[in-house]
Image (tube, rainbow, N blue to C red; front, side, top):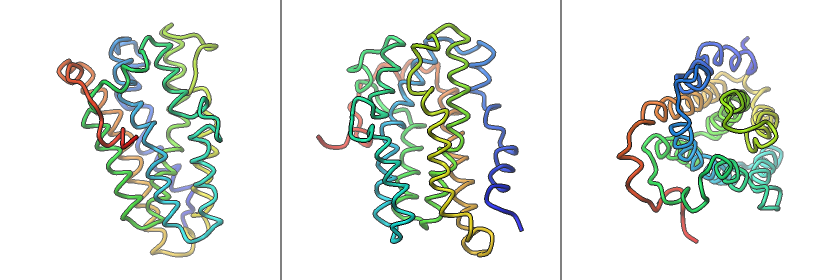
Length: 242
């Protein structure tokens, strides 16, 4: 019988996330600093949005035992109440250290890759099976732990920031492994002994990995489109209402 952990290991081996063209370009130096900054400016809006589908999903979970790790994760996203350490704040500081003023972050239009990613997470957390949604968010957190380490190495290797100045990614290299475990722990037992449940979880793992890696692939493909940089926002999905 395949376990949840064996399935996720096989999935990551098959998809080889760090062979995504975005990360290859960062490693081999073919991605310019300008293009990296622009794509990270877009990625910011996936970071800012991520907790919102999670909060919707928490409201759909009937078990307090399953709901609590979701709420803890949402709390981490918001700096455990200290908003200066929220993920929005730390990623904004990261962009500032790369030369992007905070007001510039919100002046850009969303690229379709980012909107597609955010919309898929909204859809699965609002309408899909709860185990599918939990697995979708879990694999995104799981992959982002390795991706954060890879991006951090690339930034330092290119000399764009020092290790001391690197924020956000340094934290997520460790934090997102814990976040992923918070999703997986509620799925392991039934995955191994309930075929219908296992199908729902496998669907979520495949979906989350696919849309997350597609986001990076799309950012890599669109990095040179200057027309996507000239039009100004504001963002509807990402901004919400004040």
